[in-house]
Image (cartoon, rainbow, N blue to C red):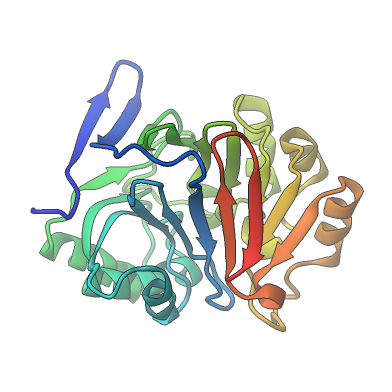
Length: 287
């Protein structure tokens, strides 16, 4: 497959580390890595663009609204995305990605491959097969080099889930830490408190500047022990306006307030633009 950018995938099986990298341009010191938390309603969709222009889309929200959001941040002639990551196959994370695969050329798909019997999930895998897109099954220990000084480290699931039946899809979510120099962002999918406790015990990479709050601010996530371990300065919440689920839950907002965490929400500010800089500074604005 001919891609817009040349990428090489190296699997170091002994260390269980995946390194995904390409030829990098030399960035200006003033340039930052861009992370867009798209306003897609009650769901998640996060778009990352590195200084060199490498693009990663994590989840696609519940509808094709993600296409309009991508149209705002990508050039009209740009019809390729280097990596798609599906954290887990619930509709509010998956459905928009099916539309994205239909419109864009995709370099690599990262997913868990967990069993889930829905029509959209079936179509998702059919389109991946039709387009012969390489698939990587995510598990803890993998690390992707997205650009110079930009890494995405997979913290969960702890074991490969491909082909497995599970009771709680949310707890199979891909959890990843994005680092750009001294700046860091923790992406948590929809994991719940039981999985958070495992991360606290098993992961050494939780202390993070910025947290994408799990499960849209549900009270089943963002436990006190997890927030204390992460000690974020900023929290980003992807949630629909007037959420019928009551997201973000007041208990979660109170917990974040107790930890003196600055909160930004898509239901109040629309799409959020986070700029991360190599020196550890960052900025967050509505977009």
